[in-house]
Image (cartoon, rainbow, N blue to C red):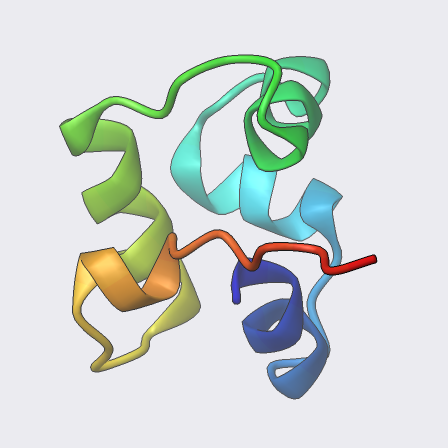
Length: 66
């Protein structure tokens, strides 16, 4: 959902990194699921995106069906 919001806002992950202060490579890892996102980081990301979506929806992982 974060990638969809980035697209809607015409933002890149680099823009999000700049707005949140989260290191770019770390942010990529967090968006891929390689690292956990802390609550404060989640709030920073939500604020930077300027969305009124609950955190659990914004960070919801979609299951891939085969």
